[in-house]
Image (cartoon, rainbow, N blue to C red; front, side, top):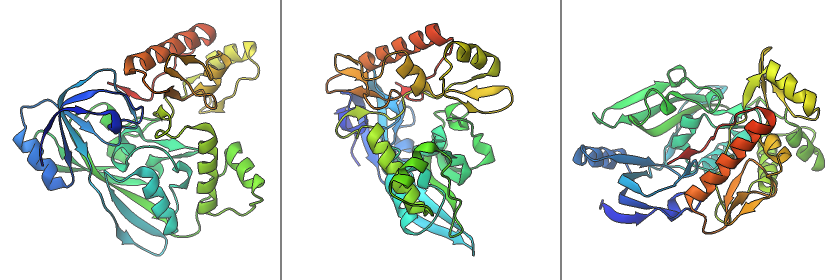
Length: 337
């Protein structure tokens, strides 16, 4: 292991933003991670996973520790379920495909989400009616200060909509090293409640879908809407879908009868941020090398040489416009650094 100085992070963030780390080191085992932490106790640290959920607006004046822990294994199983552990550095989509190849059900609706396994609990990632919390059992994490291993159970993670304890109470205090999921071996719960999935299955004349069929449908849908970060820098959905009061929703609906929405509770409604952004006229717009994707208004993109600040400025313009036109505040899902 060797610490590198003034290290370019361009290939370590899916936006493809050019920014430098004052110091950089990649760790490939828990032992290496503990050694780096022990030897750099007084250093300011920045923990880097797959780089898929962040927007770099400046250089990182810290020791960047890239978590590159690999491996997955079956911990336990019974007649109906299997408990699978994945190390934090595993690519999320590749891990999902591996579970499907084993006929383990539960993660298929979250196919093709960018990033690594270790960051999935932080955001409680989700798509098409599924979230990490649905199959999450626990995660192991190293305490940055004491180097001790702590296990967080599902309830201890305090999962919410794109929320967890790792974004609040214990932020910057732990490094997730592995995640364990409980998946079904058969009699899978096929989740095709979203119209896009139903349409994709119908197009392929699939009436009795398997988890593989659902995964393929999700991949096809995401490929039509979301650009490949290797071809066009992006971080997936930039904004959260806002959850607003029913009272506010009814006011907006009076002016925009075609507004899409999902009932969350008798008093709350979730509105697709993408619909709001598209309605406000931003879809497909470009501001220099920063812009909004032509197929999915939720996705901000780097056309080549945009700075993180330029992309952030576009996001702020969108937020201000949505608030002015609809009276709805939308929050960034991406972590702005």
